[in-house]
Amino acid sequence: MQAEDTAGKYEAPAPGKAPPPKSADDRSTAFRPVEGGTQMQSGEKLLVEAYAAIWIITLIFIVSLFRRQKRVDQRIASLEVALEKARGRGGSQ
Image: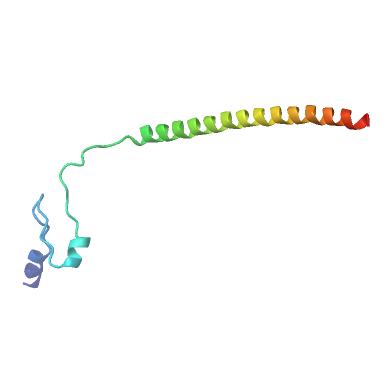
């Protein structure tokens, strides 16, 4: 007889309807199914997009490094020329 009494207490609610929360604490932790949510993203597609983004960012970074290095090389060359001119003037004195 006791099994019959507890069986009614633990039955699942009807599909699509969640029981109303009994307290404020229940509202924050209670599961409430939401209709919709049928949009799905392919994990493979997201993985490919992530790798593509990483490669693009890496390529941009490498190109910027080459440009910076080119500017540094030009600056060093101009400083070497200026140094040679300064040595040429200083040596004749």
